[in-house]
Length: 174
Length: 342
Image 1 (cartoon, rainbow over the protein chains, first blue to last red):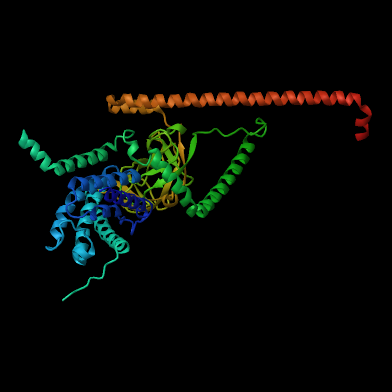
Image 2 (tube, rainbow over the protein chains, first blue to last red):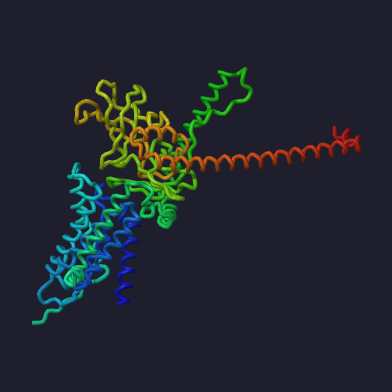
């Protein structure tokens, strides 16, 4: 149990470190800023305690808020996707998957995994940028920010995933 | 009862979810009532000092350009001082023996930017000076090129500034030549373009006109440059202009700023806010007291400094006196020696 806890804790701090120092300074076309902290919530395996996911999501959001002057915005959006993650993961889970499988390319398959991350990131950035703008006056800009950042973050997360967990060569037996 | 407890245990994640979301939203909304939530922002000491270290490193990136700009500004000021000196001398050659110092209209505290965002709707700047240095909310912040923004909240050693690049920022401004006034707002998008609204249609405006602070608010003294008009447009109501203004301050390389500390008049502020809302009086009084205490401290420090200086001068005089006395007695003892020197 404790080893899982420390893995998650170190994941939280590493993600926060890179988010604050690197990704917060990326502004593609002026609107697209990736929230890579969402990766924290993407990696929970099936049947993780829902309370646990909520608390982890809330804490990484809150820490991000403190570091980037966005009081409550990231914590609200991270808590929201922490609530959705188990439901979404169940939807994408293949029938023969283990009871507590971890979502990766190997367990979900490339496209399912991609879609799973994209949907989570879309919810995360949607709530975040709507709370940031807090108006629908310049909704085109907000929409560009949401779509652009979700796609960009998904690509970054897939890149990280490939870097951290290289794909095993799946052997096919007859 | 048992059924209720069962229900809560079974759905505990839903309750936790609602609780956490409510906490987040409370943060989000209480952030606007400043001072209370200062610990959850970059003005908090731990985060502020982290950013201080980071910006210490990244500041080298813009060093060259900043140096060039400072050099240019220096040169310009030098010329200005020279011109003014000449003017003063021309005016008062007979009556003024030594040049008097120009009266200082306002005092500033220099500060460094330790964190800045540019691409959000609510951009904020964190600077490394706070209440301990005499900075209070609603003081004006400028840089060498022009106006930067207004102090939003303060902690002991750090402050958060709401720059012109914030959708909630509204600074009163005027056109330098015609004195028609309006207010400056910002829309999300470009980091060097703001818009001047409420300037009446009969005002004569052309591209290249300079927009400056008008001194109606007690935050900025009149005449500080803000930007240059680059485009004319009509506002949506058709009654006034919507001027596109290119800001003088370059926010993407902003590093050195100054906070205007004593242009700020609490008496006037109190009167105005009382007229709007009589219940707000308390917070203003607290602010005023803080300011008074700070001024008292400043006065004491100045007195002590003066005393110390006087002591030094006294000691110096005594030393000189004793030296001349010694020299005189020495001169009396060896008159032939001084003669040979001559």
